[in-house]
Amino acid sequence: MRYKIFRNTLLFIFILSIFSSCNLFNDDTENLPTEQYLVSSEKVATYLPALITSILEQFGANYPEIEPIIDEIEHGVTVYKISYITTFNGDDVIASGLVSIPTSMGVYPVLSYQNGTNTEHSKAPSVNPDNELFLLLEFMASTGFVVTIPDYLGFGTSDDMFHPYLDKVSTVQSVLDMQRAVKEFIANYLKDEIGVELNNDYYITGYSQGGWTTMQLQKTIEEKYSDVFNLKASVCAAGPYDLNYVNEYVLDLEDYPMPYFLGYIFNSYYNLDGITTPVDEIFKEPFDTKVLTLYDGTKSGAEINDELDTKISRLFTADYISGYSSEAKYASVKDMLTQNSVTAWKTTTPTMLIHGSSDMFVPPLVTSRIFQNFQNEGVGPDRITMVSVPGGTHQSTIIPAGIAAISWFLEIKNEE
Image (cartoon, rainbow, N blue to C red):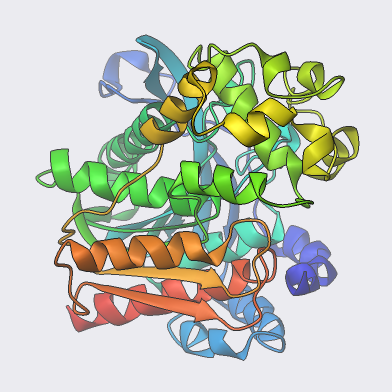
């Protein structure tokens, strides 16, 4: 992707950044505040405004739409890895993520970014914070946000468990608990140390799996936690919101270029004990075995694709292709996809939906359909808009969607 331009400046970043592996917590445990969610924090890097500006100006050669964001750069940035307590299936789990914080005294809102599909432990945000996309997001704290990037369960500190991919309950819980941990981190450690505080305003965005996560998060906050999290705006990009529709779309194709997405869903739902249909009644041999074993955190999506098959008739059984929506033996598949889809509601949060018009992985009609459903629920243009990126593929739309989200968030924040 075009953001590979960052690689030419990584050495410069490493030289001018201040790295530290020391824990922020004091050794005097008797004087430590009590946290319900926060477990630990570790400083990763500090970036000066001049460096951030220089790198983003190079980036702007390919993405001129980032120029208004560059004009908003004001603060230095310190990046931390935090670990925190969340729950999964009723048990406590220690999860992790990145937090990027302005180095200047002030009261800031939170910008939470939910990243897209990843299969490699080594590419989780807190493990690979100098990834080009994550660096771009970390830098956005320089415009006056506290930026959070959850790892998701199954990555970072929790990489000893499977990743519950597209599981609504655990995904939303882990992201919300990270926000609670960030509140504790700032209130207990950064407020007195550098004068940073939160104002309880939240801006949320994400792409692909992260777009789906963001919409699930938005709906949950509005329905249950509006008194805790003051949602100011939400940008959901290229998410598979209606999983049954996506499944039907794929089964009607001859070829699907990203079979690892499909295998990931089934791997997750079998691990969650949600699908009761024998796997060999869904996937043909040898893929019936592979979808249960390939997602161990060591293989990239491309490597998993090579182990599967892009030809739908070779990947899935004929019975599944023809009978998924009607045969009783596939009811558990349909139920899991239904339970983990997100449906439109009369949202009260300003919302932007983004999708590339040439996306072959998650069909743009997924976004068009839910946009229409929001309108059918009575959500007007003052609350929801849809942006189609002309010619945008699933990969090429990632950065434009992120820039559009942050630019819009800055407009809203600056109007306050």
